[in-house]
Length: 286
Image (cartoon, rainbow, N blue to C red; front, side, top):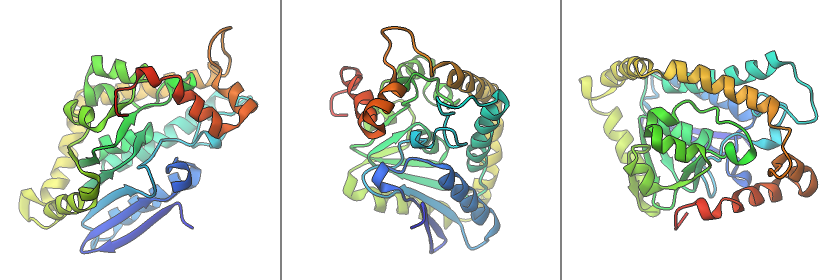
């Protein structure tokens, strides 16, 4: 079974993240598959736009901590990686996301369940992000004792709200829409239909309202994001995340040591315990 399923229908390239048993957490294989998706989108004229979604109960919960020590996650606490490898892995991942942001064809993300970490980043990078009412957004890095590698929180929601996210808070879909993180919120039963309608409108109109406009829009978005300091924010986020990966496998007395708990009770139980500690810091309904 492929970690990403694809299909082409009426110009829409349907891309489904397909690790539903672990809420589509991103591993090294999925990063490679996403690169192949982008090559197909860029190279095949019959592909007019992309519909991005997740299989199972969630859109995507971000990088897979089961992949510690690979380029899909931070280094293993039991390894002594060279600093250069840690930075190289960070930059390698960001090249995937940067290329995704600069696709010359529109992307509509249909988001349900949890969109965390790089899952939230994909929502930010899509041209339109439509979420089901029950969707949840956030960045789990701080809950694991690490810095976020996502430079777009500040750009997407502003400094005060970004601080809230980066202190470990998750937000529901209505809050995400109000903060400008996503485009629209719809009932779960209507999510697929609404995403298709939106993408169909983007790819079947001509001139500057259609594909020509999307190509021009890609350059406008890149220019505006660079003018807003995203490139600098990216360098900072990648650097601080790499440095925190080195430091935060060590913890002070009294601090919650997520990685020790992984060794004691296993990754799945540790992830549940990690989030349970933040229950009082989560909006009602999330």
